[in-house]
Figure (cartoon, each protein chain N blue to C red):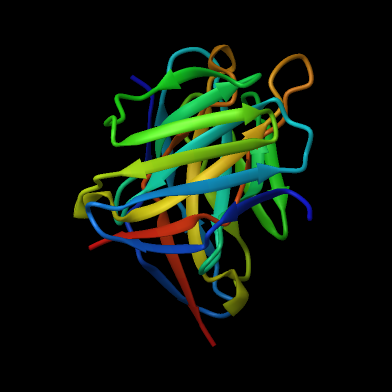
Length: 113
Length: 114
């Protein structure tokens, strides 16, 4: 079945450090890929998405590129802030299954000032 | 109110209690979902409703009973729960069809079963 694997956390960085959170997926066909973010005490918010190979999603300084050859969708940010501290979830959706999302386990990010 | 609203935000219940979680979406979407988020596990899809009809039940125990009276409201009725059912329960909505959207999530209900 479909699955998403994320790097285990927590990831602890100093402010202004470079961030990479790895995400790889297993799915047949051409899924859409997403990063969701969950701030403390909140629900999930869509951070960015990509719907086809080589697409780059970007938002709030975060970027991720859909790499079909490596089945990856790694999240990056050049300079993190304390306010980026949250849990980040990678997810996929196969169009034939509507909007049902398959999530990774989530990666906790802690940014220290 | 905008987006997806869940009530209550926190709930503590005994194993013999009956309670209900409520979700309301103000986005005009036609599909709604219940997810369970347990510590150190991926989010698990529990139920899917499209146009008020249940289209998926992911082998969820019968002590969880969903209800979707209309396309804007979704309930999760709880009875005789177990401590391992303690989790964050997230509701989501989306538009299915030619103009589908991504899923929008509520803030969740933190459930503790004692």
